[in-house]
Length: 271
Image (tube, rainbow, N blue to C red; front, side, top):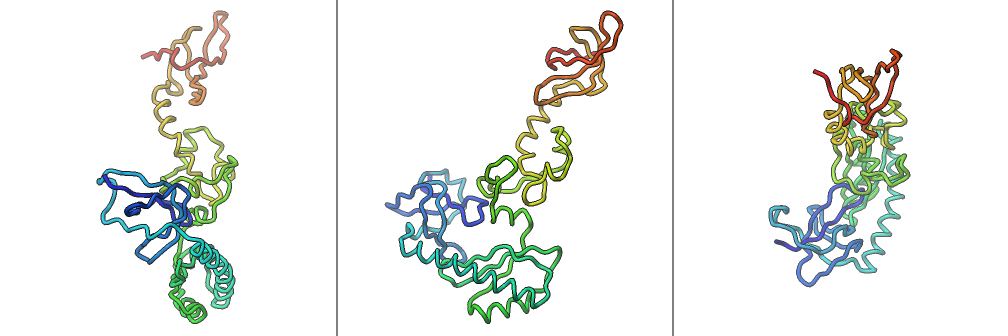
């Protein structure tokens, strides 16, 4: 067992473990300075000091340098203000160079030794001249990183159609595969505006209940199957996974065909 804390960097995403060292009691939502491959970074603790099994970590863990001080928070606020200025400057430079790319987010490293510009583009972009131009303006290391629209949504955040903060910016560690087949199996309207998230891609939440739909659908009689009901034999027309009820076309006692619903567990499938 090893004592660790879990942190998330700006833009959400995966939770990373760090070593809190001795006598460092770190609570959830505390701001901490950690050592990363890119140098020191200020981040937020999402899982306070606790112990995990050795097989759940990849040693050696990077250490927590300290709980953020008032001076650290002041420097971070200054970096955020600089990012707005850098965003405007880079946007103008992109326009001057005539590059087909959309700048989305700018991040200063904690000590200001590097500025990362995140952008989206339909294809590859030759931004070598842009990097040189930006380096001459900011006099520090410049990195341009192309990201996808889902990453943009996670970094910028927002509200989903459910009225809650979007999943990728709040609790999802990794993006899961989502397909239009899931929407079909859940009997959702296939209108792009209704099944797409703020990123314009299929909503991640389509994946959450998919296993339940698949399991229940396997237990329900297939459409077109002949079944026996309390009202006599009939043919399955439709299944509703949410209500766990099946629509069946039956012939009642006077010979009139009628469509009725039954709990699928009360229906017997005829061979």
